[in-house]
Image 1: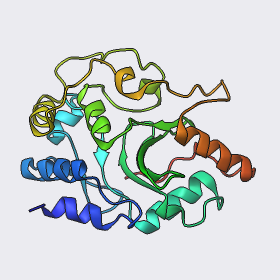
Image 2: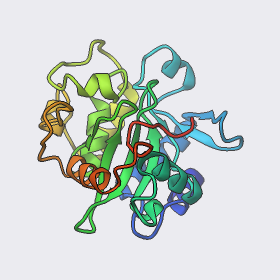
Image 3: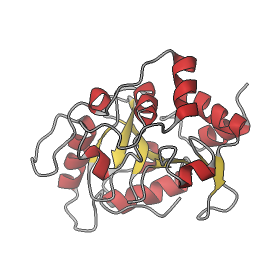
Image 4: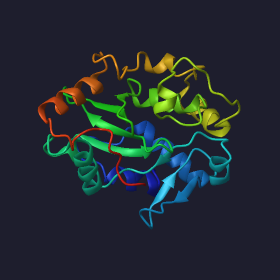
Length: 229
């Protein structure tokens, strides 16, 4: 049986974007170990971590704060990023974690084929898919970078600058799902869109560019980060 945190997070998601089973397992593991810190922006909410809060503060676990946005928050965040260009944006794009001190987020996205994807929304405008499956994303976290944000994604061939991060999380992931953990994020992500190139095969990048080209108002754009979690 799944625990309270996983169900609380699942209940915030629209029917179009159900919580992946891999994330339910992760959230149960987080709750079993008590890997939480309180949300200052949303009193009463807990932020799920990959270790204890002191480990987060000392850099011994990757800095990611899990908290699924409520429908109203997802709608507000979507409008901050894209204006009114996406009707019912809260059914297409739901932030579920803050991934860096720069204000970057990771979100569930319903693509044009009706498939759920996991995507990066960078505070400086970088947008991309973060792996092809939910398990890819969980493997990405296990590599042990300090955070998954713009600076990190700008250099996908670099290994983590520090060893020994996420020891408990990596052990759980490998045992629970029988997967391997690569040495660098390029092995999961492939090509990251170059902000200067103007073209990319990344499906989320292409979708965002199409949306922004439809809505040309200067107030719209993915570079405007939502409120702190």
